[in-house]
Image (cartoon, rainbow, N blue to C red; front, side):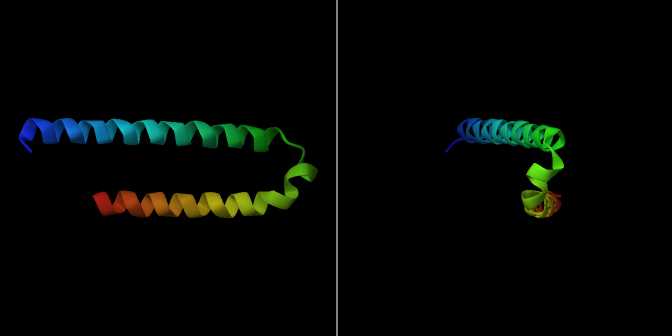
Length: 69
């Protein structure tokens, strides 16, 4: 594989990752909006689970980002 092909491949991977990141951000913002608008009695059962999952996701992303430094 020559340098130009390798660079092109890396750029495609970067673009795909940006797209996925942007898709995740939109989904999480939408979820946050729905949670904020929902009556507390309707979300109380699942809110702890969602909070735990979100905290786990944040820690996982932070570890991954720290590894890249």
